[in-house]
Image (tube, rainbow, N blue to C red; front, side, top):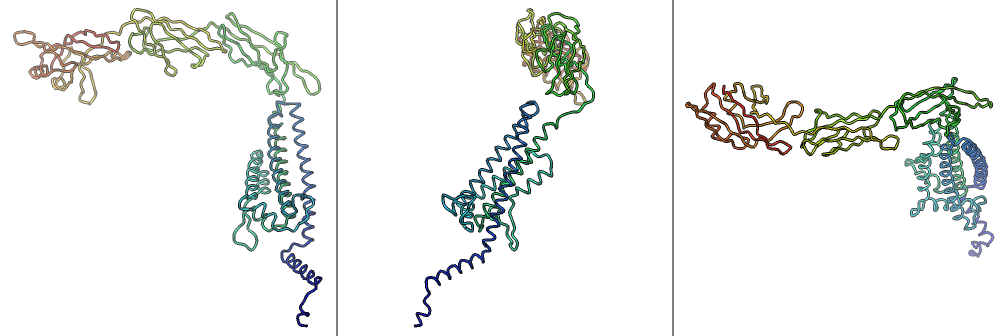
Length: 521
């Protein structure tokens, strides 16, 4: 009988089970009223999204219409608006796909996000969004971060940028009563009923559409941002140059000052309209001199009237010319590098080319180096300039080619102040300095050529008490030991001669140089 008192009927078991479920739902604070509230919020957000999307569509279509009527002003802003819409649609579709996956996890493959059956399912959102192997929540957060930065770049207004940063914030969230903040995705989707997770994603779509609307409105406002309002109109002729070489091209822009470039005036020269709408007047003169031309502009206004503005200008045509000069002197020397300056007035250096006969002509930056080959044969420099896409020969200049002049022999020494100096003979020279000298050198050091030569050999000629000459040979360009011994025996006021001097220059020619007299002091 005791056992019979504890046995439960099937009806009582069902009642007890329902009580346990109800108790659990109350403990989780997920009542049917709360779930119904989420449904109402979701429906309201869906209607709001539709309204915001229509508003954004209206702004986009207005910009699209303006760009079709005035491509010069509107095309660039329409292109940017199109990119904004594509980026927004991509994120919206991603959120839609996540809502569908969450609802399918709760209700099965036939689930409908607009009619959720298991609204109180607390696992579906976490499984879809926070699964370790496929963290869709983290991917969504990164996608929102990227979209937020992309949209903010279109907003010069700092207040609007701050609003977008706030509504699309994915910062970690610190819940009341906790010490450690949760990641954005954990705070939004962990232990959330399906209906709450879907409502949250719908709210996210609302924020994304709001951000899109801010960007589109800003882009539409940029269409007229660069307009300039003026109260005076004047016709101006702006030639690229008033000086034109024969064979070159004269170019001038005839414009109305401060005119809207999308509403260009019609330009007439000698009663005939220009063939282009940019006010570009071009001709190729075939004679030299100064020429004048005139015309007028016709400017249409919004009320249908047309005003006329007269203008007049002139241009001068000159013969082609160039400047070609030897930097050092009016001749070129064979066998060495001769700096040459080449320029064409009105032509950039990189548009100038030049060639030379009887040698080579090379460019070094904005300078040229001529190196003639044969002595006695003229070198001709031909200069060509690129003008208006054509190569025009502007000058030919002939140079006489000469052999380098003979250098002057000298003894290099260091004075009392530590400066290097040259002794060229004919005046007293200290015996101490002579004994310290290495040998004989030669160079053209007149301040123009400044060309060193290499001494090959020379002789010193001394005279004894009987007047007999005693020549001594050098050791190449250096004083030999016998020559130095002779220097030691020299007394104050004595003289000797350096003769038979042979030297080779950069042109490879061996020369016999004039002798020099050395007076020992």
